[in-house]
Length: 279
Image: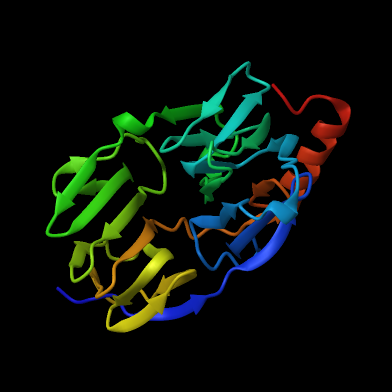
């Protein structure tokens, strides 16, 4: 097997979203669609007291995408226009398919230690599914399989590793999404499908990815030139591993909406204004 080589490394930018929430953003939706099928990756860590009260993300719409929230510390209270409400607790995952349209609210809360730590990933939907039925896959921490091997610990959200499958299923992008932690002096390798977009978000420690040293906090973007990802570490490293099949369709992003044409975006805005957005 041949290792994927690194295309480039992204240093996340600090951005303000929602009602004044500070985030580290590696990339966001753009018409160039460079990370197809992935649209956005945010890392939130509201752990500086100077930030003050967390204002969160009041009610807002989505159409044409999937949003994936993975909490490591702290919680997020959520509710939506379908009547769903609940809490994404530490270690939980919420995979929300917005389809034709949903309004929802996400309000972060600090842990007992005063921290919030987690990630949000946006995944595109193909044109044929953009106006489909909205749905949720709520995944409790204790239902996420843990794969341990030779100093590597993997929490597997979606995809398959060593015959173990993650609990999130029936996603058009056929993603791999997992939290990978390597102990000092260990190494990790896993096959990756040919043609899939492959990313690694390094958020703790230092690792050697395909022979190149990468320090946290960084988003690693890989070339499409191999069928395996290999990581080694002396001091220990932890990263989110993300891979998926690109749809190779044009996109038109507009805030929380990602469609395929300008006309579809214009129709979405008209529906939002005249009250017919929620079917």
